[in-house]
Length: 87
Image (tube, rainbow, N blue to C red; front, side, top):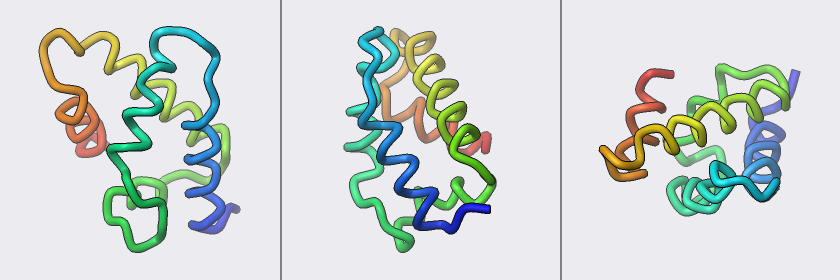
């Protein structure tokens, strides 16, 4: 099982990866949204629900896909907040 700091590192590493598709262009916005990547940031509490790197990467992929689908209707920050609340 990953420690919380390892989960944060995985999140940062995954957000810094780009595969050059449109959904990946939102990874940078996610980096700005979360702003600080440390255990004190309450926005990162969702990471407690994950046990592996692949779960975190899947979460990012689902969120970036959701942003692509809804970006015409909502601001990116609103989509991220909604997704975090769905947890």
